[in-house]
Length: 218
Ligand SMILES: Nc1nc2c(ncn2[C@@H]2O[C@H](COP(=O)(O)OP(=O)(O)O)[C@@H](O)[C@H]2O)c(=O)[nH]1
Ligand SMILES: [Mg+2]
Image 1 (cartoon, protein in one colour):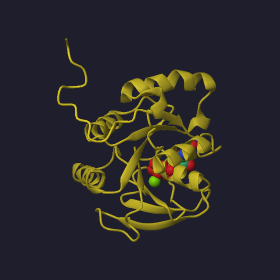
Image 2 (cartoon, helix red, strand yellow):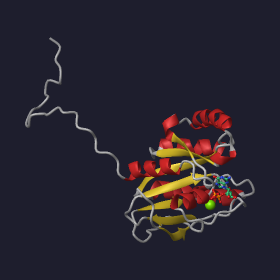
Image 3 (cartoon, helix red, strand yellow):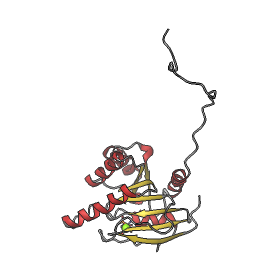
């Protein structure tokens, strides 16, 4: 898959039907400032698509981007912004969870976490939440350009352990160098066009029933 077309579609505070709804949606969640907007820009090869900011807590809306007129990337508000008041936190949590629970076309969630640090308690809770509701997700360790190879191999197992994911559920990404971009695009492709189950070659005769069970003790 090549990403040839990407545009900003809309921002919303609560889930509403947006134009063209029905196409698959892929959501991005993660701490404020972890690199969600930068990843969208790098993936879509357009630096001005999503607003990035060095100031945490700026994106307080759900921002939707349309990609290749085929699917939507849904940039959820960043959690874990230390200066937010209790009310504001509850509003954010409501927005994130409201979307995750109610979207009918959500196919996959990318949970972003900074490769330099151990995932936060918020990250851990988010992973647990996604598991609890059976929402398929991939963890993306961002800002991979900021660590050495040695730090990377030290930090990735910590991320797996803390978020209780297998190594194949974890990818690395750098929006600075585009490291991981090809891998993420091929992951997107698999998510959007899941492989047909491989037939096992066993043909069951029509009308055959298994009243006695498949095997019978003699
Ligand atoms: N070096 C480096 N900086 C990054 C990367 N991704 C994001 N940043 C920086 O981190 C800050 C927050 O990024 P942003 O995409 O706005 O985070 P968001 O709040 O999760 O949307 C910005 O200053 C970005 O330039 C990356 O892969 N490498
Ligand atoms: Mg952002």
